[in-house]
Image (tube, rainbow over all chains, first blue to last red; front, side, top):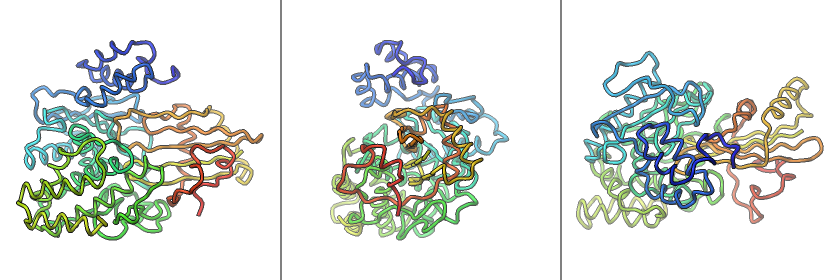
Length: 348
Length: 125
């Protein structure tokens, strides 16, 4: 166990780690939390931690929009967050990745605040921490449990991941899921976790652009695709695949119907694959309701993410969205019918 | 020496990989890869990042040496062993799409022996 990279690992007793996990220093807190998560001696603490994600939140000075952008300078996870390069209200950088992470995180905060009345990811004003230039030519962006981490892409398949507002919205929405129903990250609950991240990620974009359901592109990641691929995006909520027979990406594996659900073990049981089924249902519901997707369908889904539990699967999702639609717009309302019809359209 | 590389998941949700038989590569390339494998000092371990993390890419590198011994190392974006970074980068450049496999009734290959892996039996179409 002691070969790992963490200085706190193995030498600090669990109760001290818990204390450190409450530290006001982000680096200390992160190291402590990771050590807890990796320590076999701290299994109980780890269970507590996963049940109490709030421990990992960085409180912001005034409990309102507060962005911090760090430069990881090619460092790995163990070097996060990196060097602070832009903070709330600070001057813009010469580095586009820094400015994109800052602006897109701001739009995401504004979206949640103005549309749903939510104050940051934890609804208690936690700081939005982003690190850019994570890893070397990393073809990925991820949520660490506490902050966003963005790779630069290899310049062929992908370019920098901060460039797409929906990618940033997706990563931050993983934070919102963490602080609401905290869906487990495997199989159907995991696919729903990915689904909510995609839904709110794309709604941030549509809201920012003031697009109706007809004007929206319903794509995830169109701005991060590199010059080596002709794929227009990574995922689409609409019918059909986002890409096909691409030499670098292959064919979009997302199903749009329950009968095509992936049942293998790859990708934690297909969390980024099977999210295609609820994604398409959201698209069908939102387009049937019409207007702007965040105004009605978005509210149904936002209520649902707060109502589900960590182990909820597709069946619960189907029932709950219908129930929330009835609660918001009335039983047998056009909206509830649209939601029911949408799930029927993907096999439920 | 044979190298089997797989990557799956991540924000992009791609499934990619490469199966390399160093015998069939130009000697210079094979030599470079052999050096990177030595430097990587891979062991039969699976390391994972924080359980609260989302969208991490999962990596798997299986090496079958000339004596038929196999080592399988699995890690993710948050737990890449520093020593393996150069090898990982070299393999990523060679990665190509691998269509998803329907699960077979057999024991999943992730828990299977190294021999099947070394032959690159997974992920072929």
